Amino acid sequence: MIALSFSAYLSMYPILLLPPLVLLAYDDQSAKRRVQSAIKFAIINVGVVAGCLAALLGTSFFLTGYSWQFLGRTYGIQLTLSDLTPNVGLWWYFFIEMFDSFRGFFLGVFWLHLSSYPAGLSIRLRKQPLAVLTILLGVFSIFKPYPSVADTGLFLSMLLTHNHIFPLMRYGFVACSTLLYAICLGPAFYHLWIYAGSGNANFFYAITLVWSLAQSLLVTDLAFAVLRDEWEQERPEMVGKDVKQI
Image (cartoon, rainbow, N blue to C red; front, side, top):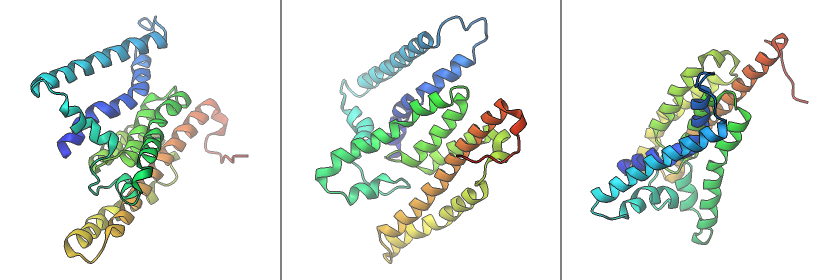
């Protein structure tokens, strides 16, 4: 299961990360090399990525004995959520409790929700594609079908690249305390449910909600700090002053 999820992650989620990655690569060019438009640059690089993915999938086709069955066993599991093994995500419990007649509808809604972030963030934070990448990694660690602690670790590692805006974050202590709370109680609740038999699925799902809440606080706080930093750079006279939304 871990190998299948890792294989799918290598191909599926980088596609959602492609918009900010293209913008980051475009902005990283020197002024002399930036002679082509962003649209042309994006088309060329998307074509390169598509070609690389096609080559890798073709190689997998030959290595698996001229069979495309590996697609359903890797990417298909991610898309259809056919494995409802409990994890630290939000999907498994929701779909366990759902009537089968509504499964297709909510599966589409969940995937539409997950795929709606890259475009909006890339447009709003056009000048800060690295911040978009970090926020998206946090979103994926919360809302992907089969998340793991490693996804949160990757998000937290990328979060350290924005240490210059840490003073602008408001809920860092609360979010970190909540993460530690979930880390301590998560294994205990899982043991009570699976091994001791003195709990049920609600025990473990409750602590996964706390885990997701802590990550949501970090993601939203990071987004606020990025926007605040951008706003203060545009208005230096407002640095350090309180802002109220009217």
